[in-house]
Image 1 (cartoon, rainbow, N blue to C red):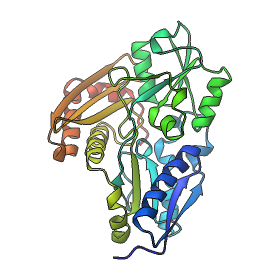
Image 2: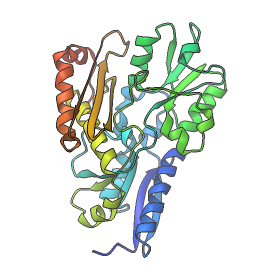
Image 3: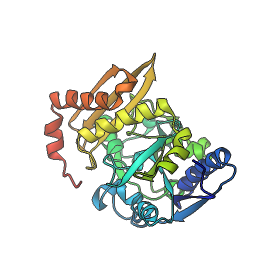
Length: 311
């Protein structure tokens, strides 16, 4: 099956999204020297509404809807996403065809004044857009003030530099990819801040049934990352799918086994349950569901019942 003469990648237009698209563009061009690989940049609703927390306006699917429409209409062949922005339940008619090798999946502490979370004084203002990070911070550092932080990476850093926050928590992967590693004061350990499902990994979305494009992107799939991310997403999906839930899920391959850790909490951090398990990487999604059941046995349903769910 020969590659088309032109391959069109749909992408958000933020600097980080474009880096991700250009990265995939380079890999596809290298694998398909006879094809022209171009990027269709688009602004999504998630990029336009910046004055409210994501949980209030419909969640992470707002970052990918316009890209899916472009694929449906034949204006693009594939879309590149940060995996943590992809809803846990894929929209009908679309598939995740490849998950590429992961960048550092951990959270990063960024501040112009302080070296780490432990150094923040009482009343210090910390910015995050994530319910997961908010729950962790409220549980472990009740003396801090947590404020919503929206916008692309550059906007968030500018708000920090303008003095609106004493520190902000961001995904390390984005900072590293954009050459901003020097802004990271500390990489948080999974014990300090368990990452979000899919954090640090890129996913390639296609229209379901596009066998030619699926074959084209297959070499971009990284088996180890894919097993980990599938386990994390299955865990999240079993505890509420696309609902806005303060939840962390993080897997690594350790001595040939998939080691999955997860938690779910209330946004105020006052109730939290966590667990971990190990198993065969080939059983990735089953392990994710199994871990969710362990949390349910510890009382996760009571926590989920407290959360307003807008799937």
